[in-house]
Amino acid sequence: MNKTKVVFYRGTRGMGIVISVSYEKDRVIFDFGAPFTPLAEVYDGTVLHRQTNAVKDALLLGRIPMVPYVFSKEDLQDIPLEAYGESDLNTAVLICHLHLDHMSEIDKVDPHIPVYIHEDGLKLLQALDECEGKKERRSYSGFRYHEEIRVGQISVMPYFSDHPCPGSSSFLIRTPDSLICYSGDIRCHGVRHEEAFAETEAIGKEKVDLLIIDSTTTSPSEFIYDEETIRELYRTPSKQCLKGCISEEGIYEAITDTLKGSDALGIINCYPRDTGMMKELIRHAEMIGRKMIFEPSYAYILYQVTGVKAAVYEDSNDRYILNGGKLKDFETVSCDTIRENPGHYILQNSYRNILDLTDYDGIEGHYFHLFGEPLVKGQKEYQIMENMVNKLEWTFHTYTNLYSFSHCYPNHLQYVISQIDPKSIVAVHSKKPELLEPITGKQYYPEEGKEYVLENGELVEV
Ligand SMILES: [Zn+2]
Image (tube, rainbow, N blue to C red):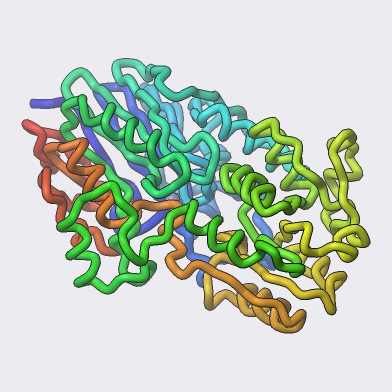
């Protein structure tokens, strides 16, 4: 009987993935984030986190599942769960990328357990902490693509995954008797899709027993297609971006087509963790003779992760980083300069500094909501954002297939599966995994929290 055990603690019916792969006394846990539920989130900006009860609150709120031997006895307080140190398990936690649904709870893991993040992700984490004046409760270890991470008898190989968040990875997990692939969040329409396909092909050369794959785009409620269309797209695995599926490049083209030759100011609301997107915005702005300007914290994050020194908005309400003297030799651009020639600029503005936009009252503008916060229609903040844009009489641009920005389209997903050709498949990160219907490999629907083994490639309950 095989000794590799898999437990899906969270993620078989949505976001907030926590999966453990163990072999005898060695255990690797993949991802440690809370589900993304903006409409039901207790920490809505008014409720404060309680530092001394962080672990207990997270477990009681269901932000993290009850994973044994991960939290310190002290942090667990009276929660009935085995604490770290109460077994001789050798555990490590690996994070596929720094979006919150994959890592928001990592600071709660006992500090004796190593937590691995790609080295670019680590740079991002440090820069974010600096911008927020936050001190980490624990330390993290960095990894690189194609450099093995050893956790006792388990070997993990990280692969590049094309995603707007830096250091995004897929993992190939080798135990003495099994080979498992956890895709992390994947997409195949990004500007680096060729590299992404090459990595998929490299993984496909291995004999994967179990593929645990991001199947976000099978969630109809979060996607532009109806169930029948999704089913149809799944029958046509291909590398192409099909009709109605906008690519990352397609989004930038839509922006530059709108702004090209226009005197209007361009405004971008993007996410500070998506540095890949920030770099592309600079490049595309240049292509139409405009300068991309960032708020100080965004410019600082971009510089820390990529080394790119972008132009900084000196009249930003976001003063913390600017006052800290961290952007001394960066080019700065003032509000007056932009007002003189709005058609020469694209300004990044985050929701919390949305009042900065009132300085452009009376100037023509295009507001591009590029997956920054607030993310979801129906959120109160989303309505406020739209109201503000209406008040300024600007045009609001958004991209309806929200989740497609950082996830695979159906035909791409089926292509990835056909390349890897696993014996077994578990769809994660999806509300409707049944819609995956893989054309190769047998799909399983494991119960969360139950232990499974791989028997001749089949997922069998222990
Ligand atoms: Zn995710």
